[in-house]
Image 1 (cartoon, helix red, strand yellow):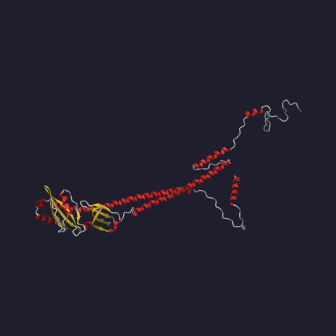
Image 2 (cartoon, rainbow, N blue to C red):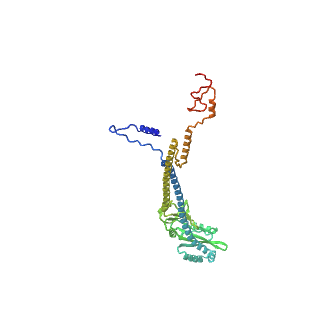
Length: 399
């Protein structure tokens, strides 16, 4: 072992290069020994992979939460639009129910059947007391197709089309007519039904300004912007609007108004965000704690591995030295299975390198002694069958 260490010291001296003495030049900087792989360096790829997996999982979870939150925001916006449309439809139904009830009154049916205009005017005046905000109440005879453009509001072809629908047994929708003109108005029409079926129609006309008053209180307390339209996507007529018009940049939620040819569009007060500030704080806190736990776990894990590997290397080195010197006096504890395999392989190798003891074969040696003409030298000392200096071989008669 001493020679081995001396050899290592000579090798180190040769690697170190020539020695510089003071006065003969400045000594070069000392070369640091090369450092091999470190346990932390080996664990680092696993740590990077875990961090990448955690980041990807966090991103996927955030996207999923964002989709859920966005879906909830859309559901809330659509629910608000449906709520406002239902309230507006309920207000219209309040009018149409009274009109339909008036059209089935026996006195009204009798006056329509008899063509008693005075009685019909009296019934119209009574209805006007119930609806003081209406512009005009008309009774239209069955099949009457005469226009009245001089009255306020005018009786147009669109009004007569509603009467034809009622006479055919359909429920005519509430519609706005003559939009954008001085005579624009809203028409509500229901049939006057007698024992034999429809005998005419009852038409109630309201002003367009009333729609604005109806729409304004429908907005939610949070605000937003709402519009009331008539028509389809190809041609929409704006009947009324309420709220902040600058909200139109956000997503709109549409809902039809039952019993009418109208639809309502609602823009929320603020665009839907994936997660609000509180939800983002909770998410980042959970992710930060998970990241901290992961880093601490890897730090402790790498330290534990380094400690175990270092202890096993020391144990294997000490055990190998004792095995090589033939003084196997201690049993150093190794914890890693790989270390135990190295020790087992080393012990097996040393056993193979040790010389085998030769066992003498007595029978073979005796046979060789008795062979003719073969002299076997024995070890010094008196032995049975050995020749002494004063003995002569048999048959030797010489001096």
